[in-house]
Image (cartoon, rainbow, N blue to C red; front, side, top):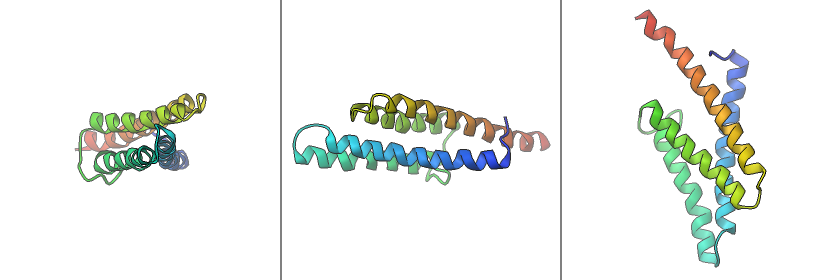
Length: 125
């Protein structure tokens, strides 16, 4: 399924916002989880940092390593899933699952669009 130009731009913009929300949710959860200032700081900075590193290495449009699509989707599932769980864990019990559904739909649309755009190039060779 190939998305029309404006729809593709909107979906890509939404993907970026979802990435930021996942990182923010991980920070929020980390700074409120556990007991003690040290635990708050380690989780509040460490969880989003880990997500950022994973995303930058494998899932970003200009990722450091070019990996197969299934691995990219796995990294996205881990980061978005962790973001959804972080929202839920931070007490936003409706927002966590809602975030997961929106992230899933966005990723499915982006993946189908990418596949549809790459298909004609393969046939034309």
